[in-house]
Every structure is written in C-alpha cells, then in structure tokens.
Image (spheres, one colour):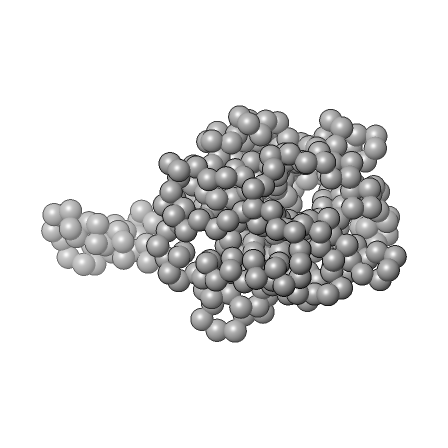
Length: 348
C-alpha cells in the first residue's frame, strides 16, 4: 500500500521517470521508515517492561484480593468493559463487544458469556443474584456498548440505574450513522431498560459517591463545536478517587476528537490512566499526559496492537509503565486503605 502511495505521489508531482525507478525510490523511503518504527517499538517495549516492575501484577488466584475497593479491567480483547467495586457495591462502565457487531461482514464471536460470567462470579449477592448500583455507557461505539443488550435482559442481574445520555448523531461521521448502527444500538438499550423497569438517567451528574470512591464525570453533555468529529467526541470520562489515589477512565477520549484539549486541565493529575481509544490513533498525546501525569497505564488491548507513538509517549514522555488487559487476562487495580494501588491478574 505504502509503495503505491509513494508511486503515485512521485508520478503526479511531475517527476518523469520509468516505473522501476519510481518503485525503487518508494522502497528507499518506506523501508528505512518502517525499520525506524520497528526499532522504536522494540525500545519502548523494553523500557516499558523495566518500568512495569514498579507495579508488577501479582496473581489473585495465589494471593487473593488485597482490597474491597477495586477497578476490574476485564479482558475483552480490544473493547472496554470495567467493573467498579467498592465496599460491597458494584457498577459496570461499558460492556465490551457483543456478538452482532454490524461492522463485521461475517459472524463474530464477542464477549457476552465472558462478561456476564465474570460479573456473576464477582458481584453475586446473598440472594444468588447480581446487584449493580448502576450501569454507564461512555459512548455508543459497539466495542463499548454492544454487549449491554444481554446484560440488561439477564434476569439474574439486578440494576438500579442506567446512565445512558441521549445519543446525538450530529456528533458523528456519516459512516458511523449510516454503516455502524449506533442509533440501533442506542434504541435497543433504551428499550431493554424500559422493559426491565430500570431507572433511566440521561442527564448524567458531574459527581457522585460510590462506596468508598468519589466519582467525577466529564463530558456529560455535548460540545457543539465538536459536532462531526466522531462518536469518540461524545465519550464520558470518569475520575475515580479514594483518599490521595485516583484513576481516570478515558473511554475513547482522544486528541483528534478535541476532548483531550477540552478536559485535560479539568481532570488534573491521576495516578492511574485507563488509556483512551485502546492505545490507537490519537490516544494519550503529550499535551494530555502533561496534565494527567500517570504513574501507570492500563490499556484494554494487546500490547502489540498499541500504536508505537502511543507507547513512545507513555514510556519516554510520561515514563509510565503500561499493561495490556489481553496480555494479563484482565487486570484489577486495588485501592488499599494504606494509600497504595496494587495490580492483580489471573482474574477468574
């Protein structure tokens, strides 16, 4: 692909030479560039692994829970599903990807069984059912909202409140509206909430108390000047605070969407960052990291799929270790009473 791009760039720039010379020039340019990216990736991974020793995850199967104030980052490949737990309370932020993503041309196996199974093993109440104080969707991309349908329909999962802000197609690119089925995803969720009699809250509060956690919520409405920037610009971010320790769950907040710039000074310093957009394009810019200053970063993805420039920013600029949920089969960040954040893995 890149050779073709360089070929046409040279061809239409008015430089007249035979095709073989054009392809050679394209190769001379692209090969060193790709080699540089490859070397950059290796360097950041090596340094990141050294940094990771600061918060090396320990096996929960061997050591057990270290606190009852925890953020569970489930392993749902490159989709987001986060279970909050605090002092006996549970809540779900995003749902992971379901089995019927309209962007997939063939049948796709999502994470319905894994997510509901994990919730039932973790949040089971004394009556044999799961009780969630609330569920919240950060935005209506299918890899964040697509698995809510089976969760909302499951009679063994009792949900008090659903924080689903009204879907606004004006924020989206045309292909998101026409091809990605976001409106249908939203309509299905609202229908499920109504049929279960769950309290629907679309005016999302900017703060709330959840067990021992204090939550601050950002981008609870819509910025008119971000219309047309894409559904990522609708992402709700959540800051979780216990004592002097904090985490920011960045949903798909990115630089190109405009949200990093608008929110960075409001969020402030956080010890833990759940990286935005799975470590893909536009995630974790230097300007954003300058304000957040994370000590560690969780990425809902395989580390190998994280963009090299994102790894570079995290490793060389923020000097923060990063952990992929896929690499560790999910990660729990426990907030201890003595003011530490401890990571565990091998969860269920």
